[in-house]
Length: 153
Image (cartoon, rainbow, N blue to C red; front, top):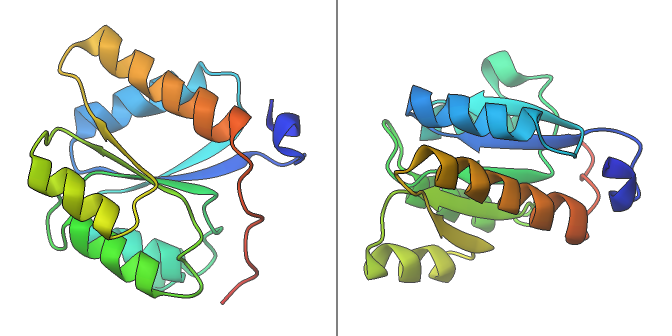
């Protein structure tokens, strides 16, 4: 439970994913998981940064405890989102799990160079995909000590 994190509130997760099927699967896997969470969904990189910076329609958005970030996004790709997050003092401590179909070595290296906290390749198989999301939940939300959410910026 989220009490394992020393929190009584649900974990705030921002999923940045343009594929509706993958977003739905991630949502279902997290819903059936053991950690109480609020999943927020951004469909592209521009919306993700607006959410993170509390701009426009996201003025009242909570600061995520963790971001699940796809790399290949419309408008602004995940690499740009990651670079902007890690360059922003108000956002750089938020853990980012790159969750993408890319197995390209250059994407893996670039993600880590941009300070991604981990890189996970999405499996095509449905059961394996759900298993991966649950493993992320189990590790990042139950084992890892996450930083307290910073105050509004």
